[in-house]
Image (cartoon, rainbow, N blue to C red; front, side):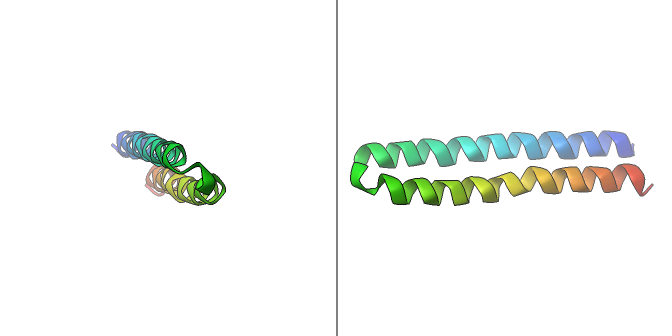
Length: 71
């Protein structure tokens, strides 16, 4: 059961991160199209947002490893 739980944790984290990154990047591109003069500031803010979203799958992997090896 721990292996199934670990797999679900990783899959859920990957799906959530993929959706989150897609939303962040699509909204940034839309904002750049509306206000091209702010593209530099929007790009740096986007990278911060993507980095925060990418922390979720890393935590998912840590939880999965704990589930597998702490049983």
